[in-house]
Length: 618
Ligand code: ZN
Image 1 (cartoon, protein in one colour):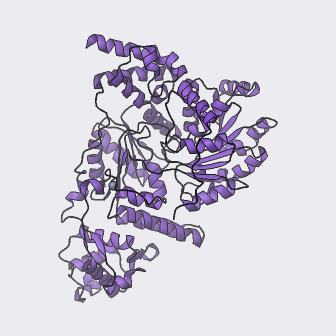
Image 2 (image 1 turned 90 degrees about the vertical axis):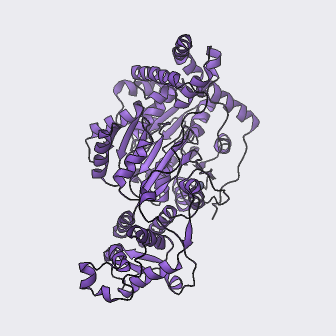
Image 3 (image 1 turned 90 degrees about the horizontal axis):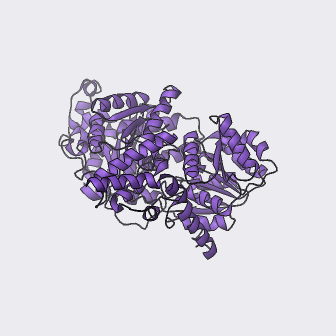
């Protein structure tokens, strides 16, 4: 069902002129991105807003731009210190007075922020939710006018979201104490249940709920059954030498094993998980932000609030938690809009683990029911018989889409066969053994393998014994996953993973339902080899690659000297534009993407000098 989103509203012409001038002069960007105009028109019109925008659509500009154009004080609530630090660096580099107060703020910095607050120069103040809800910051703000409260990662308010944070639930109260000031809540991933809950908790009256295109066409989507995940991940990374990326793992041990493997392959690989010393984690994150080509092997603790625009790939070594989590995690790639690659591996063991986590949680029954449905939707995406992007967007309520041409199913093609007979054989194996056995036993039975367990239970005497000998183990496991995705068969983690006939199973058993199945090839070749298609090329035509490398080196020197991440100086996209356009004057340089007045003055000559040297030596 399509959510009841507020219809799109264009900007008032005067507001548009003001915002565009500010966007160009301060930030160096020309034109608004899709979705931004709608959100900005509501913000400029004084409305409260809940905006759902994909990562990379320029969410932060929806509050930064009004903060700079309108003046006054904007509070930004953000869960991660790293994100605050980076946004504050980027704003200051653009000449905007911004600051943050959090547990890592030193006394000098605190003084600078308080002085700017005192004499009304501070435009954006970043606070953690604990800080703001803790009373300390509220006292500081007492008697001051807050013009806009921006709540980033707003899905954390909701227990329905995938990343609930208790301190976020107090933000509705904080908002009232700030005189119910104008508020914009932003998130990249929230399905309908989550959006409604966030709106209810944060606002007294229903805000404008703006849902903007989830599509990220620059992300290549691919999902594959596990067939030696270590090798699959290595093969995938071989396509991305020298690029920055994240590999999400389902266990701490796996992050360390994979990082060690890849280090031996010459990759700048680092593990990141909650069991590491804080200093080691911070070092890994800082390296990732500062250097090109760092690959982080992480549990899901990594990446929230990481603002690095040039992450070129994200891989999952196992099934993510939900479609929302999947989308948010892959969304960390390609925020600069350039091509980026993703790969997700999945297997029945993951599905079982996720089911067990849901079943064993303390959550109320209603919540567990929704979580099971969400898991099933994710498995259905893994086993999708058509374009993955269409399946993904349909989950978020966008149904009017064409096949994307940039996912594994569009690129490699997908063949489905009539799976009626296979479904009947599998169901028969489940029923004839009393719905008491796990998938490996059922596969052995179907394939006619007289294992000790098969003989002990007398299953070699069943008529089902060996009826599936024409299919490999890998094919049968794939069939079971798809029967699960279709609701034809299911399993109970609490009952040692015993398979049961699912709600759609009776009709399938009688041959009344049509069952289309994808069949894995006989060998695991398809599952293990990298996609036939090559990694997406990251560089447009006409870019001088040697010059680009020199520009990157210069950027790194400047970033080091100022103690900021490289992309705060300029994002890759700006360097690529320099390497293509070879500007010969400050005026020409100032027209490039990401070059505002402050950055032109601070960095213009330094980069022009690199271009000149390259031209002289050419
Ligand atoms: Zn597609």
